[in-house]
Image (cartoon, rainbow, N blue to C red; front, side, top):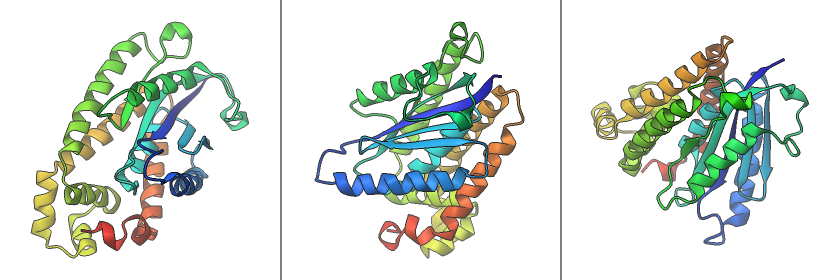
Length: 257
């Protein structure tokens, strides 16, 4: 039986600098536990914290890994040590629930590693990159997987340029709007006027960035043979509720600028 899955391998930039290794490792362990909590009733997800600064996730559905990666990037608290994600998706014959993530060897994992290694070599690296298997490898989803890989990475590069142009407050407003869903709620939390929040959203291209994210997730869902949008919708709702219930921990006072 063929199962649709997605993978990310996440590393952290500059993790060996500033004597931050232990704090970063503890944070990643907490993040691993959060991912397990977010996904415990949504499909099947395996997560591993490796080698101090690496997280590996395998999840049901083509869009799940990217969805998790995007939300992680928006709540990430170490601004000088940003994460970056090598991603892949495709089909496996294994039962995901039976996989030992620590020992599993598979072409999809190799593709995610290739994408991660590509980012590792970049001077000004992006947050996300996909590497997709070819249909000839019996793991790909289409004969046009190479072309799709180019298109999705181009879209991610453009979105990255827009995120890089955000000021700290624009980035914060974008993240809070993703979680809270309404300008007035962001305004209330930050204790800023609605017009101020609206200005930051417009200048920081919040709507453009988030719509690009939603569109990529939608396309990945549509590529699957099952009704995967229900899975990713539920996953996003669960993550948002989790963050909102602990919002002062994810966006503490010192991050509110």
